[in-house]
Amino acid sequence: MSAIQFLQWLTQAIYVLISIVVIGAAVRRATRVRVNIALFFGITTLIIAQGWVVRALGIPAGRMVSALTISLLLALPYVLVRLVNDFTTVPTWILRTAEVGLALCVASIVAFSPNMPLGVTLPLVLYFFVINAYVAVAFLRAARRTSGVTRRRMQAVAFGSGFLGLTILLAGLRAVQPAALREAFTLVQQLTSLASGISYFVGFAPPTLLRRAWQEPALRAFLGRAASLPQLPDTAAIVAELERGAVEALGAPHASIGLLDEASGKLLYTGPDGLVPFDTDALIGGRAFTTQEPVFSADAARDDPAHADLYRSTGALAILAAPITAGRKWLGVLSVFALRAPIFAEEDLRLVQLLADQGAVILESRALIDEAARVRAREEATRLKDDFLSVAAHDLKTPLTTLLASAQLMERRALRRPEAPPDLGSIRRIVGESIRLRGIVVELLDAARTEQGRLIGRREPTDLTEVAREVGARHTSGRHHVAVETPGPIVGVYDRLRIAQLLDNLVENAVKYSPAGGDVTLRLWEAEGMARLTVADHGIGIPPADLPRLFDRFHRAANVDDRNFAGMGLGLYIYRGIVEEHGGRMTVSSTLGAGSTFEIALPLRAEGDTETDGEESDERVGHEQHI
Ligand code: ADP
Image (tube, rainbow, N blue to C red; front, side, top):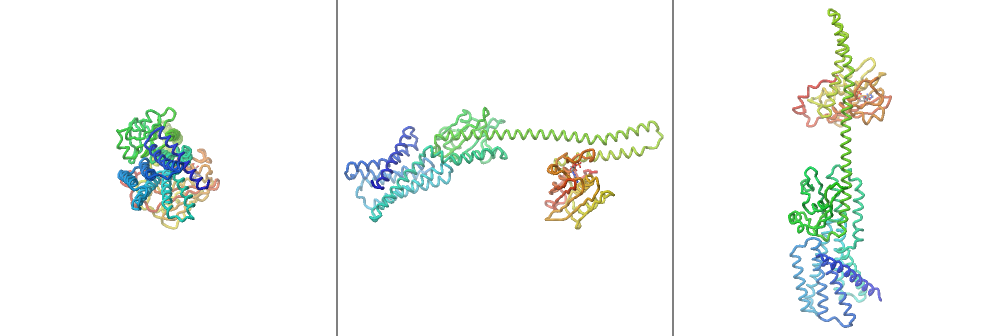
């Protein structure tokens, strides 16, 4: 047996084998697509069988036999058009044209066979090629619109049509082939015919193993992403990712998740304009939800006529749906849909359930993360309130005790000796402690304002150099010298009182946390449209571990305590608020035991460069200056 003969037998055997498989499938369950696939391979087998019979009998094919063979061959592209229609939509006029064309072809074959003139043969060849080309293009276009396994199937079918066209072309060229090349031509023709049969088979009826292999990369990618999905910013983002995973794994054009909304008792699906509520038993997805079983509908418009229009308008005619359920908690439903049922295979229902189960785990983890965050936020709020109360009470208690003691002392003296001159020492203590008390109360109020972002009031052109010089003069003493280094006036539009408070307090801190004395330097300059400012000291410094939380409310560094440095740990929180409300930023750097530098950058021009910050800011302009 020559190589060509062997190849011919192999091709024919494979075609017959495929025919047995697909005809068997159609007999087991006669869906439209299965019948069409069986028809396609059945016709090919018939053509092959005809050749065998003719050869076995050793007689040349009769007129009717060859007419039948050619008619069967021409029926192939028509069956392919029907298959295109099973997987995507074919305009009715094309279907009708293909039918009429086929009828005309058969009629002319019967009339003219076996000696058909060129005028008849040419239109037949043209019919075959045009229809076949349409099939190839239709499947290629469908492949572009889909992904994953469906895309590969569509591509395989398009290749099949390409190979079929080539096979027929080579057969047609037989008459004009040079004799020397005849063998090579026949060989190539055998190969293209084999390739076409296999391509059609894997495209139309891929064996389960192949389908799984095609699905695997998408599934693997989805499962790889799954672990990180609960960390996405919100449930909507998780739902979108789950839908994408289902689309890719199944090679379906669309997927949609409906999540149970506890408040309304409805399933909320994501539509183009936001969430769309549906009763829990509505749609095909609702059936899967209420029965808690996966559901397959080959024709959703027929199975659920109430929503037929919706299915048609969204191209959701074949639907696979599976409940998303975590333990006994019904979370929602995953629906995957396509225009045509043959896009899906039977085992896809199990795959959708698997994806829905995976979705349930992801959504549950997300719910747990949200719950944990809520608990943490509640704990944090309670802790802050406790901190606030204890710090406030503690800091208010000291001056109040002194105040009370001094007032009681004055009272006793006045009772004992009403004629005695007023006790100036006690009065001064009372005034001093009252001022301290007011300072603490102002700081507490400012902290609340910072929280609400309502610190700054009317803005006006303010020369930072001038403010810095005033502050420097106020804090320079025998122990500390406050140096102001500046290139000249630096004018920006700021809340002057707040800026003065900011510099005052930063310098006050620098002095307070430099108990051994030393210079404090206030340096100002301009860079990149910003006013820059540093307050540097040579004091106790800040432990590196405290730097990240230094601007938090009530945070005091580990190297300070109430016995040596009075304070609440609210100041920096407020100062940073002042800077940020002006659109600037504030940072700190420090070397423990060597000193600290606070650095501020403030925009020179306020947004829109207005002098005031709106109407209501006038009400706030009367805030007290920190003492
Ligand atoms: P308070 O000074 O009332 O404690 P602040 O908010 O002003 O509150 O400061 C928070 C903490 O930052 C201080 O408790 C101190 O530990 C640290 N700190 C602030 N300024 C300096 C500085 N110039 N040098 C060293 N530590 C500082």
